[in-house]
Length: 289
Image (cartoon, rainbow, N blue to C red; front, side, top):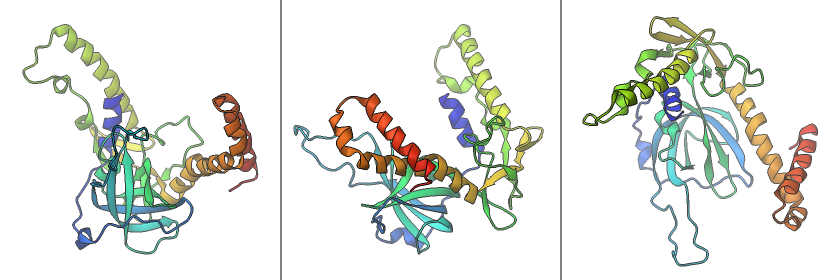
């Protein structure tokens, strides 16, 4: 599965490192909002670097010692298109937390990024971005994103439409498939049985990769797949609001509203979940917040 996800990332085109004088400006990810308002923008990386102030210094012998599972990064992006939110300026700074190392968004040339503004700082919506490309009509759109768009049976995900990209979005499919030779060290002794077992596994994963780059989203000409369908950034934002941001806000509202009742239940997590579910369902029906 790990190989499969990496292939999906590799299949949609790569990165260039922009060079800006702004990389010398003081980093400032301070919040400008009192709530966790979402700023959605198409951005190009100026830099993403490890935060030297993280993790905070602690006494390992203290009862209050916290084991931080995520690394923290300072990110600076040039805003190419503000999709939603209250933000003025061409450059935006924010913090990014990631459990696996350097955030994967940093490998993408142009990305639709979601940043929560406030109450303490601007923070990247963890693992949450779309690689996007300029369209011929001046908009931005993602091509057939493997995580959300390549399932023809799924009708509640963001809408696909025929998109004309300014520069062709192309993938050489065989180049992102796995070879059994890459699974072993050059000097590693491997039996024929081991090799055959790995080959079976790779064949299955390569079949999944091959299946992603098919009509109607992709047009195939031999080994080359060209993206023909995609989703505009406004629709991607709406999808994120409906499936992630609004449910999160409703959860926070309900958790605060019923804090006394939830505390009284202590470790009865099933009862706590029932209270939260009932509350969030009502908010959804009322189209709140």
